[in-house]
Image (cartoon, rainbow, N blue to C red; front, side, top):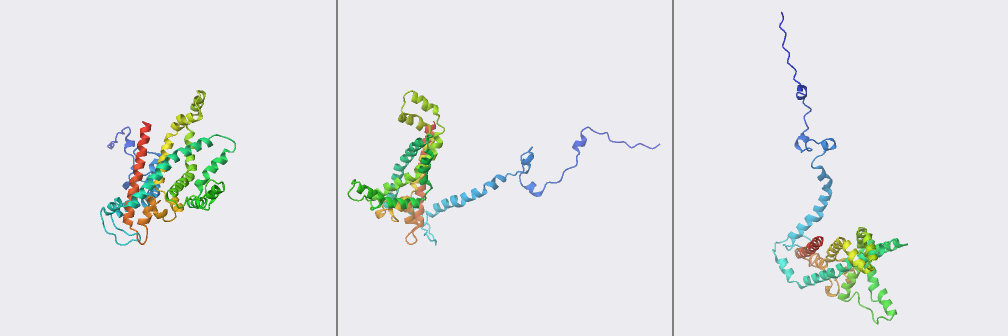
Length: 335
């Protein structure tokens, strides 16, 4: 009698544990980290480097046009490099020592700081008042909003040329004042150092009012109307409601406008160049720090790029200090 061959006893669930292995993963899939365990759907095809791929253009532009120039300027400030290139020698802190004893540098610093001290408070308050006026839905209010914003769209050079024509000795302003018998001789708007600086501040204010007005219009939309109605019922006038309801309601926007305006005021160049000519006023008396950097660092014959870089570092430190001060004030207000 034939002997019957023994058959293996099937074990429940064994067919699941002895399934045939799938295809081996590709080399790229083994080398690059894949999705998290348990991922499914589109996450199976997502890699850790994909977000960096999308942000690479922006990061590259920031490095090329921001990070690299900053560190290059910092390195140049310790050399005697020339604007047109060539061999540059290491001079240590000589450029900074020269800067501290340079009266022209301190004059430019004074003009820049004075510019910021006058322009920033006015630029914080005037656009807010303008936004309050144009916020109401009145017939034709859209025309006035567009008119106030129009200077923002104009080029700084075009605006500067227009103000040259207005403020010249035979310009529109002096001609009108003389015909109205308010003055006997022309006011030297474009030849007196202090009047040039004040005229440049007026130009900055006029061109920036419409831009920051838009900031405040957005902030005013978040101020509850019920507060104004309740205050009006209690007998509070328009001025009191403005200082006790509107201003606290847009305080964050005021801090933002103040910071942006302060940074812009320290970097002002075009206004001084257009109204004070290429010399920066009579004898360079109205030069700001950016104007001074151009004169001492970029002149192809007498310029010193190393010294100009040192002044640029000083301007950066001044701007950074203003920004940190504004952030601290903002945190104190929030607390």
